[in-house]
Picture 1 (cartoon, rainbow, N blue to C red):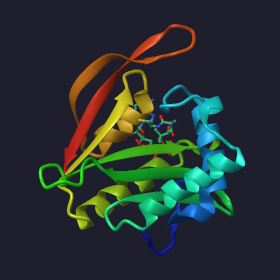
Picture 2: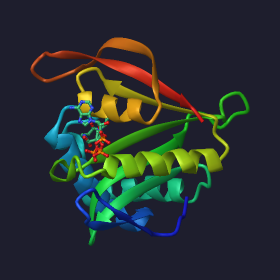
Picture 3: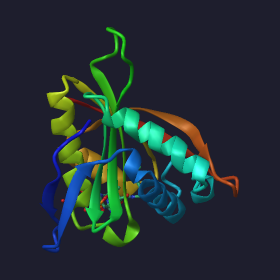
Length: 185
Ligand SMILES: CC(C)(COP(=O)(O)OP(=O)(O)OC[C@H]1O[C@@H](n2cnc3c(N)ncnc32)[C@H](O)[C@@H]1OP(=O)(O)O)[C@@H](O)C(=O)NCCC(=O)NCCS
């Protein structure tokens, strides 16, 4: 969804811009996804699985634009200048009448900005966005060894609903379970 840019302040007093992104931000967004996916194993892809070719940028642009043009979904990023340093996605689980009350989120912040309160800013924003869009349930999946993210989600009022053992299989053979969490809005 298209939203007005707003200024936010990190715990360090630094000011950043938060705004929804669209096709024009595809290259910046892929650069962001590459780094966050390369820094930890917590994202759904390895960094080298995030494309950066002309075609990848074009395809990502289409995906971002369709979220931007949809009043019930958003990709909202925190910018430092022209660089995306954090992002949250709010997507619908289903558009039919039986599941249109449910949304899911995905979140990431570049490593060098962790602990500055940006994840909390993004979560607070996503919860307000989802309420305004008429969702009554917000859902997410988090790896069981991701203590920081689990702490953040608990702080924001999410509760656990289940665990899928071996949800991720890393290249070195390690298997990691995924916890499902939800929050009633
Ligand atoms: C999870 C992530 C988004 C948090 O972003 P952030 O900007 O560092 O988060 P904030 O500074 O706003 O908040 C951190 C909160 O996490 C929790 N937290 C931090 N470290 C923690 C730890 N070691 N154990 C438990 N909880 C912890 C606290 O609740 C803290 O809030 P507080 O400072 O008010 O107490 C960030 O670490 C990240 O992008 N990680 C890599 C990608 C990822 O894991 N994405 C989520 C996939 S499900």
